[in-house]
Image (cartoon, rainbow, N blue to C red; front, side, top):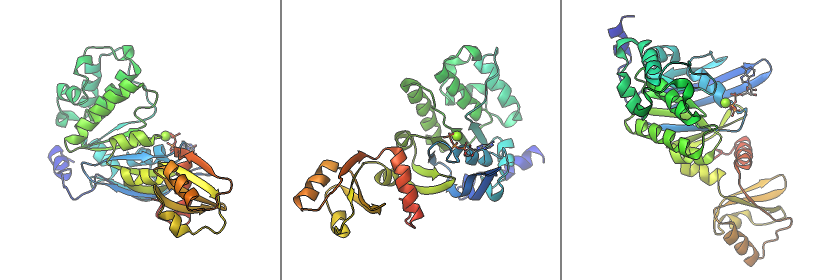
Length: 316
Ligand SMILES: Nc1ncnc2c1ncn2[C@@H]1O[C@H](COP(=O)(O)OP(=O)(O)OP(=O)(O)O)[C@@H](O)[C@H]1O
Ligand SMILES: [Mg+2]
């Protein structure tokens, strides 16, 4: 295909999703890593893919980038097969593994990667500004701190003029200040109308940086919605006690309570204010044998969301 045909084919269309994954399935031998993942991302959205170790996040991301094909299902990026979108420079990635070439400067490395995209790539100075590392241009790649290195990898993802970046746990092992700098660069990039998809283990990181959160566990999407909605289901605290014959509808109306479930013979209330909930339960004379109040940590939340979706709930 000629260059002009490529740019025509990748003309921006606000209606076409930046990412469209349809019923993706992928196994490695007997491990079913991804078991029917489906979601779409609109241009300009920032979406977090949240899930525990082994959930299938990286496998999904690799398929999105065309690094290996799904066993079943399909993927389109800007209405194109992933390989074509990547080749056209529309999509950049920061993956979990991968070393940077040593003994060159940051500017040289970004220039080298930009060169592989031909004349459509933006100027190196523009990419360095966008990644907020203009000050590192002359520094040797092998002399950088971990946080600086991640921002260089972000610049490499942008080097072809990408309108979508896919980041697999971009802040793993970074300290607080390095995280802050990387997220600032990413949010500024997103604010220019670009699309960002990133994976994380941390609800807080997802909440702080994404418009929307997709929760994946055991190879399936178990919740998908605005951060507020996911936090309501996953965050907060739980108050649990033995299920006897409490009036569940009445419990739903108690202060702080946003969800009532019965799980393994126990009533589990998700609440934004466990003190007020317990006080109200006591005040109403509700029997609470084996009472437990716990922070809904993310692992609990995944379990809760997983069982909610398994029981036919929307999982959110
Ligand atoms: N190349 C591979 N060969 C065999 N099994 C694999 C391969 N890649 C992933 N898996 C398995 O597939 C499942 C999903 O792995 P994946 O890397 O997608 O999870 P993840 O959500 O990215 O986890 P993490 O948070 O630890 O990065 C795991 O059970 C993993 O062991
Ligand atoms: Mg991973």
